[in-house]
Amino acid sequence: MSAGAETYSEALAAAARLAAEWLKSLPDRHVGPALTAHDLVADFGGPLPAEGMPPVDVVEYLAAKAEPGLMAMPSGRFFGWVIGGTLPAALAADWLVSAWDQNSGLRYATPAIAAIEEAAGQWLLQLLRLPEESDVGFTTGATMANFTGMAAARWRLMADAGWDVDRNGLAGGPRIRCFVGQERHETIDLGLRYLGLGQPTAVPVDAQGRLIPGELNRLLAEGSGPALVCLQAGNLHSGAFDPFDDAIQVAHRHGAWVHVDGAFGLWAGAVPEFAHLTAGMALADSWGTDAHKTLNVPYDCGVAVVKDSPALRSAMGLHTSYLVHDAEGPGDPFEKVPELSRRGRGVPVWAALRSLGSDGVAAQVRGLARAASLIAERLIEVDGIEVLNPVDYTQVSLAFGDDATTRAVTARVIQDGKVWMSGSRWQGRDVLRVSVSNWSTNTDDVGTAVDAVSSAFAAVRAETG
Ligand SMILES: *Cc1c(COP(=O)(O)O)cnc(C)c1O
Image 1 (cartoon, protein in one colour):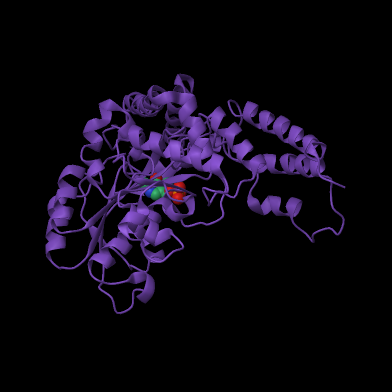
Image 2: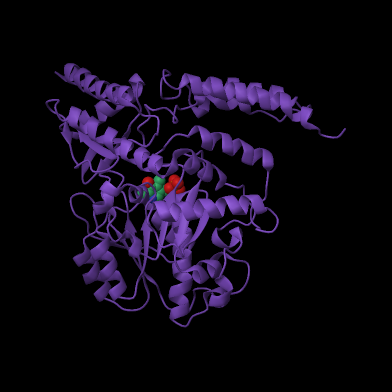
């Protein structure tokens, strides 16, 4: 039997209907899941039956059984970690990507995907005000985007020190000294570990988690040899941005490569009023960000941007090291990311950007920050609630007196299920962290968030007297 369109249509129609039902449930449902993974394994596990199941039944079964174990992450009332929902054009484009099923590593083999991703990459460079000659790669997320930027750094730093890392590996070569802010995201350490660069030196930060350039200068001056400095655009707790102008000047004076982890903060570059946050950011050598956070495309999608294209293509390509002239032109997609075979994950980025337009991207980022500051402004009015950061971007860290009370309020907010926010620890205190990352969060959702937190606090206070 040949697999014609009809073979697919029933299952796809069911998937579209079930997806629409899920999306329709988002404005009202309890945000947290009703069941744990432990409760759910029996529905999906056991011995794999010998008999198959028709595709449409597989889809129906999955949706019905998964439903109580889903977290309403794409809801406008989800403020946990830094997550982000899905723009309609991006979700629909992602479905097309699956149907097209293009192995997107080669420009020659999948020209449409290559052209779409190259265009999306150019748009991103313009929007985020990054050097236009940079290479752009679409990774699974910011962890791998940062890894990619730092892999290019490793290649360049080693080459400049006269060491062929591709041929010789790391052993016996010069040691790259790595510097990160004390409050970098832990996945930076993971990227360095993948690269065999070991544990980085943590540079002291200020009260909002921003790296202190004078401290970076002092630590760099303590040694010599190749150095990699990783800065941050967007602190998880305060939303703060490292002082790029000063820090990058210091780093470059010591000959260091500068990478910026801007998983959600790089997007501040798209908003003219946030220029003071990102000032100097474009002077770095590489940048990593997520498209599945602030831009709101479906998982998984990150973006690696590297100015030194030969370094990137040497680090990620399948050939031996590039000569500079080889790196002219757009190159093959596989030369800019860790994977060879992969889906066309830049296509939903193109769709998101095209549906918003440049004004729309700026408005979306501005709107997230505006909602965060509204939540902070209204909660600070409540006696006993502390807002621990100036809310310049999308993150708010709250405390409710002592740590035990903050933890109790966090548990209560999650249990009530009207919103979802993360409990965390920051600068020696327990905090309730609010991250506004969803395009659909509106003023009603802001009101719901404020009510949910203040009533949870009132309930905890009533219980503890
Ligand atoms: C989320 C995040 C990461 C990791 O990104 P993934 O997409 O989860 O791989 C890295 N850095 C920061 C600042 C983040 O917020």
